[in-house]
Image (cartoon, rainbow, N blue to C red; front, side):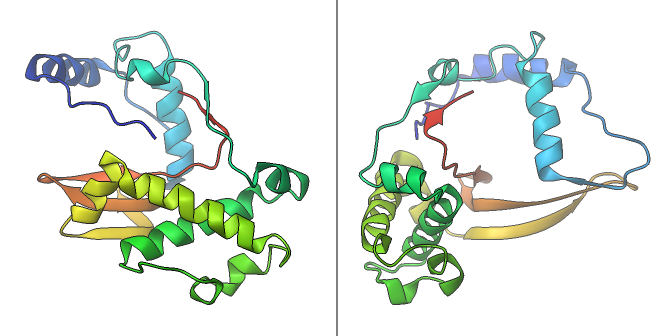
Length: 193
């Protein structure tokens, strides 16, 4: 996870102007509820096309960057545990944010653990703890820990005008310097724009 410094006032004004000139993101007229994933995919397609939106992304994510390997990578790949491992990392982060200094298997949901073979669960938990601690030791993680209010693993339904709604979920939302920060954890093996 990479954090980038806040843009200058001038850069923020440029980005705001680009945002205001951007084409509206639309969806089919006959749908009153759109999932956050559908809307996100549409927004990404609009933002990544050459347009007034250019320059909105930090240079660090302009190219695919492989992430460091973890000890459990071979087991995760061989046993197809990507989803279960991602859920395990999410659960560990959620419990760390709730103030649990140490975690054991008893502290984790059975719904996650039943998908993991007992022969590999200890090594997967060790890597999940290391990844969670790496996030929480990052600048963004420290901001989340210091936030006066935070919410993890929540679903939402947001009104968007009189006839539309957006349904989705977020991994982490926290108050940050008078605004809110949404964090979406991804189990991918590469950082891609």
